[in-house]
Image 1 (spheres, rainbow, N blue to C red):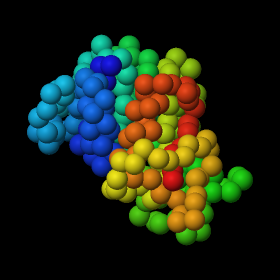
Image 2: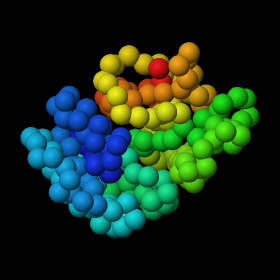
Image 3: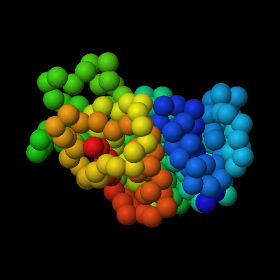
Length: 202
């Protein structure tokens, strides 16, 4: 497929780019600093900003799907969703956050007493983005939340999927950027969560 990846140089975005190219997809890697995108076959680096909707829509146009891997505090849901709509691309996958997942019935992770203050603004903004997506009926969107610890690691291809509840095992709640990318590209290739959020963890 021909994929537009917004935020291609970040922690998640760079792993998603690697996974997409590993599987033979053609990628337009969009970043504020496109020179940070490593030159490789099947990848075209383009300068773009999630807060410049007209220019972004032009970059997105003609792709089979858009993947958004930008920080929620650095973007606006209406602006980004609007750019995707304007582009005419209907498949839209969003790198989500864990804060909007349920730690217990009726209790979001971001609202738990020990949630780290330095991540609260991003987690809260992620919840706002998800709420905005849940009103969208004209895009085939998917929001993929990672586990509580979203960190560099290995590509094992072994993980669990869930829906709106935080996934936890004996070691806690975690997923590597690399395995997260596997789960996201799996969803891209074989859609199973259209207009839904799901989560991935060990």
